[in-house]
Amino acid sequence: MSQPPVVVVGAGPQGLAAAAHLTERGLDVVVVEKGERAGAAVAEWGHVRLFSAWPELTDAAARRILEPTGWTAPASGYPTGAEWVCDYLTPLAAALGDRVRYGTTVTGIARQGRDKIVDAGRKSQPFVVHTRDRDGGEDRLLARAVIDASGTWTLPNPAGADGFPAVGEATASHRISYRIPDEVTGLAGAHVVVVGAGHSATHTVLRLSELARRAPGTRITWLLRRGSVSNVFGGGAADELPERAALGSRARRMIESGVVDVVAGFRVAAFDDASDLLTIRAEDGREVTGVTQVFALTGFRPDTAILRELRIDLDASLDAVAGIAADIDPNIHSCGSVAATGARQLAQPEQGLFIVGAKSYGRAPTFLALTGFEQVRSVVAHLAGDHEAAARNELALPDTGVCGGAGDFDESSSGCCAAPAVPQIGSRPVAAAPASALILESR
Image (cartoon, rainbow, N blue to C red; front, side, top):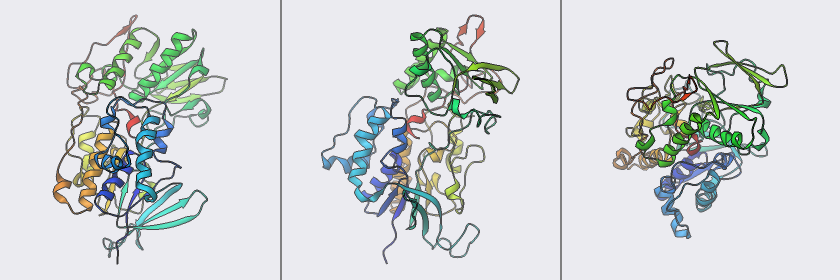
């Protein structure tokens, strides 16, 4: 009897790369994507430009599948999310043909005939992938293995500092966005608040600062949980991704210009929308008042509900795959070079299940597309029985130029190494939280 296919969840950059590797090795694959197009999540932030160049945004097996179709790999430049979808992900999905199924939502994954607690015969049973189509019809797909590349885009972290929505956050949801804005001209003259300290927050603050320069009366407040600004600026000239370095440099100049009010150590506890405008209250009682719009860009977390009947091993702090957690923990690690992140590190107690891509990193913010491509190369080699290739580490990440971790959460220190000088706005020191890698390449 023929084996069932490998099922890949998600037709994003890593899911399609996994399908390309499986196809190249002659393994049957079905990709299930709940969106109506390849890279549906990427398309939602299509207006944002990545800080990785084209050569770092295409997978080797994908290029080998695409080139016979007449496709040529872009050689240089930094695409927007929309360009990444149009010029790479869409052609790749087309080349994979009917292996990719759209409008198909995975509602659960299990072992055939066995829930989570059953030991007997577990490893010999195929996976059952429960799905629902766009019309509500339900189905079950058998799978010899499952690669979960569903990402984290659908589950942004709340603004509340303790990981739960702040008091009143749900009620104030009409004034809170968890995405990088596309068009901001409608906010001219308003008081806009950005919560978060990663690259997405930095990008948003920069976009809003341009509006503030054009439209007098526009007020921008940047709320940061931590006490040091240095990691927001990144590694500067030492960063091996020039566009990532440029983002930090622009943020430094913008803060020094005084266009943005930066408030350090502000941990959101509550939103009050009793009046026409919002009041944001911190855990220490401080308030930011008269707020028209909030952009809460505090990262993402994985949704593991579809895996609840499988035996998985996630790190208790990061919700990341346990085998890679020590290398990506932002409390202790912020450099670009990480150890191997292949099939051995990604293996789960449920044999044949692999969580890859941004979802493998859980809440850790340092994921790059290059990492995901290496993950799926190794995982597929393992599934094909090529254990030498699976064990080989072909990952070489660009260094961030930041040599330490996040530093003390409550203090103004910035980690293990000398930090850039803290800029001053008048007599006020500016402080910020640690940088996180751009979500735009992975979610």
